[in-house]
Image (cartoon, rainbow, N blue to C red; front, side, top):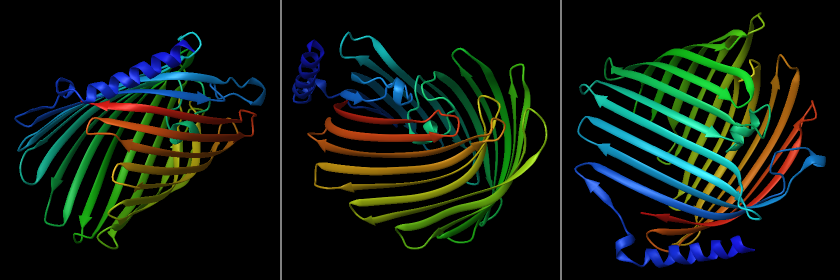
Amino acid sequence: MRNYFIFIIVCVSLLALTSSAWAVIELKYEGWEMTVEGRISQEYTDNLTFAGEDERVEKFMTSLSLMFDVNYSGKRRTYDFTGNISRWFDNDDFDSLRGAENASVGFSHQFSEYSFISLSDSFHHSTFPVDFEEEFGRFRGDWETYNNIFNVGYSRDMSEHIQVVANYSNSIYWAEGFEGDSVGNSVGLRLNYIYSVATSGSLSYNYLTRRYEDDGTATVNSISIGLKKYITQRLYLDGNAGFALVSPVEGGTSTTATYSLTLTDEIDERTMGRVSFRRSVNTTIEGDVFVNWQTSASLERDLMENLKGSLSGFYGVGEYELAGVRDTFIGASGRINYIFGKHLTGNIGYRYSNLDSTDNRGYTVNSISAGLTLTF
């Protein structure tokens, strides 16, 4: 009960701060901008550890988050620094239950009117899956993971209609208490053909090699063709199709068809909708090959001037080829945001996920949250 009073006191303090001029910090200087957000919320989950029916743990939690975004935009260069630290505490004794951190750095430079380079590095750590896509592709739900991904890309306009893009990526994955750390390196080449403002196509090749500590190396060769088409000024289609040649750690080679299709529609000035379908193949942190297809949909709408709502759904089916395990996953969420003022937003949300697995890893999770976000 003591922590509920703390939550109420903090909420009232946030409301008071937004009415005080000294609390509003807007940093803008010669192309630089900085934004800081603080969030506090109360959350309930009926399955803290993503466990089966007999091992479910219910918890009421207090969530605290701090986020920042610093960016610069110049004539030829851009810089971007973002970060997020989140903690979930038990309302009974305020012990830490969950944690997540994200940090990323980005840079781009335009050499000329026809060429530019971009570099980025992102780090992510969490003790639980933070979204439906990560939850679907995770062999264990309550599992502390780390990853760092570095990307560099170079783009060159060869003519009015032809663009060439080359990229390199390095990814490092590791998990607490799990002997499956891996390092991946990939190179890719994409040829874009811009037919018109409304229509463009692409041809891509990518080679990935992932080395597992003490377990060997897996490789993936993939080729795809893509099409992006604006059907109207607000409705566009983005799709690609191809195949992947996969050589897992244990040897052998298999060929898998891959494809994706996304339809995005700005239905009106207040409503945005998106539907996507994707079939892909991934190497997992355990050294397995996860062949899966997934579909998702989202809808965002300004219900009133200060009231916004969003809905999302996710459905996926995948198989871990080496383990012989098949997963079916369903996820749904809804959220309502109310803008109290320029710097304060309130929100209420609900999240549902269900995993059905042939190796009895299945679970169901229901979560409810309510909180405030203060933006400086």
